[in-house]
Image 1 (cartoon, rainbow, N blue to C red):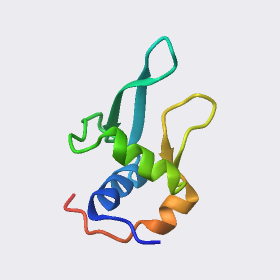
Image 2 (tube, rainbow, N blue to C red; image 1 turned 45 degrees about the horizontal axis):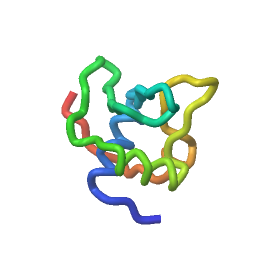
Image 3 (cartoon, rainbow, N blue to C red; image 1 turned 90 degrees about the vertical axis):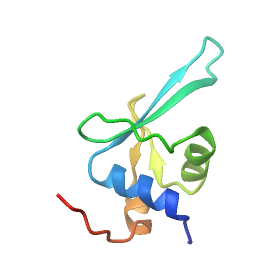
Image 4 (spheres, rainbow, N blue to C red; image 1 turned 180 degrees about the vertical axis):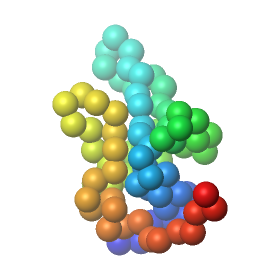
Length: 85
């Protein structure tokens, strides 16, 4: 399954320990969404459309009401990327 460059960046960030957190309104609709690195920094190029694409592809999932994290399927989708750490 092909994924875009931006989806690839998000999945790589999640594979390194990042998470996606949601804020919902009283009607249970998503009000705000953040993609956070493992250090707690917010990734700015993440929006609701990208979240829905990754969820539709089953690359991310939430368990027990916690933040969204990468799934095993998502790990298979992500390609190796050099990291300058």
